[in-house]
Image (cartoon, rainbow, N blue to C red; front, side, top):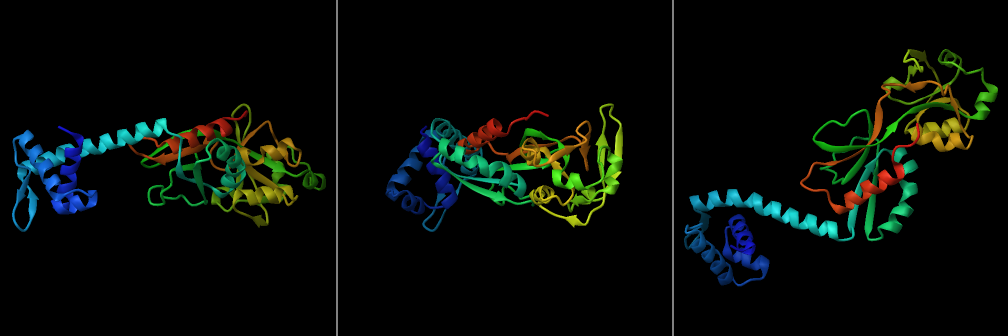
Length: 301
């Protein structure tokens, strides 16, 4: 039994017409009829009930369709997956990320990615909204969260650790800031989420927690705007390590109280690579995941 005959049977069942299928495939209607008739002879059952006005599946045909249609779909996916692995990635990959992560971490990598995969186009969807991957046709998303909820496939790219930072110019003119309680005398740069606006939580090497109240006159989003405000000397900011580590290394920002962990919500949070659940991972998504792991994998704590 040839795959072509089974695929033709499924198509005829969906269209309800030999002539319609023949037109779609640029075949003679008599050729479609002969293939279906040969399939019926091989099976020993009639699959279609034919009249001068209409054609419909018989009971046996309906049962056969429900059994073989998923198998044919799976074989098609297997064929595409096999071709995907052997061929260079092409087409367009839609990649979603938060505004700050997209601008700070992904855009700088695009020259290297394009040099490696010149036939693969990239559409960056940078938004702080939690987009519906299926509805928005997003192939891969980068999400910042403690865990990933929902019917999605997620892999941890790297842990996220927060830093309290300020510019050298701000610290030179401000009161000393060596312990969490000192924050009450400083201008904090605030993120608009409620948990980030009233207190920061510190944890020392013995695991003891200390909440430090904060206050400030400037509230900004996205997080990249807070970093820029800190660079301008406008106050003290709580920011993820991936957003400030380059500026700390260059001396443009000072990491405060480095002997303590700090957060506004939870200490265990991460950067995740997320994609819709599907039967196989397209090559274009696979190479992007591997590339991001290569360049943005776990940094030194």
